[in-house]
Amino acid sequence: MTDEVRLTRSNGISWIEIPSPILSRHILGALHSALRAASGRAFVIRSLHPRIFLAGANLREIASIDADSASVYARYGRAVLDAIRNLSGPVVAAVHGPCMGGGLDLVLACDAIVAAPDAVFGHPGARRGLVTGWGGTAFLPTAAGPAQSRWMFLTGEPLNARDAYDAGWVHELSENPAEAAGTLAARLASLNRRRLALWRLLRDGRFIDRFRSCVVHNQRTQYPMRGGEFA
Image 1 (cartoon, one colour):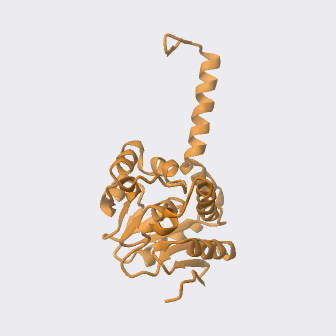
Image 2 (cartoon, one colour):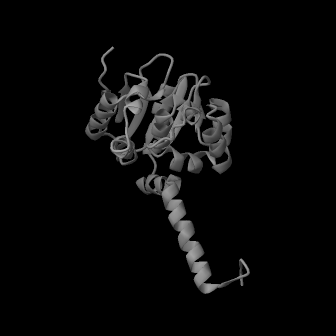
């Protein structure tokens, strides 16, 4: 199997296929190049590994990071995820098997997630004393809710596909997630583009925080607080 990310197009959908379950610097670079070359009305991201979607970042590379290179490494990963968020059409992740660490960060950058019944999601770095630098700490609470995300980060325990679906941040369960993701991507592409733009704003935790801060600021300006409560 080649170690290059594969980009194919079919019926207006771009398929971005990741060959390795380990998000090494090389794979991240190849993925970034594929994302910049991708075009079409909708996009599906899937893994070519038969049992694992993505196991996360390369631990040997992480072990080599020092105080000076940590921010560079974090920005490198976030640039790839931002490229997913900035694709022109809806992006659907087709997940099977483990989706861990940086892999979970990646699917949270997508507009929707389709999961096989054997899919599991988690941030095991908590058990290793690691905290994701690619945005998961900001985007998981928006997707999964604060209680569930805090527990996942605290314990490092994975969440199965059914529980993630019941919680609402996995959007569909399917025995054939790639096929279902293609169908969902095409359906989302048929919607008005303004809906997609609004959806991306609402799922962005930073946007919600800015909106909440604005509301609180206006309330405090118009209705001064007395004793910790609005007067």
